Image (cartoon, rainbow, N blue to C red):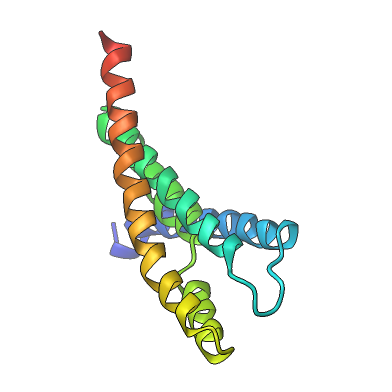
Length: 136
């Protein structure tokens, strides 16, 4: 089997998941628009919620012995990778700084990765605890 044929299913599910995740992000941006010059709460929430879901996914997939090999690429890389957004975060920081709100831009720059990483760690820990209790 050629390398392409072996990787084609992974590429396909990542692509499909990315479309779904990016569409969900776009929908969230339409539902909760940020006024021009305002703090980018929607992008912040999307990135924190997406990271929290990544924590749950990694705990569940890590504990599942029979998870299909395409689950992680579809949900993790595809859906949640498409949902979360580093590029919009970077543009938001730039816009805040260039718009004369350097303090808000710096807060956003530092707060986003700290809260996102805390969300991953917390939800992974809580999910593992829940899975252990469920087995007991």
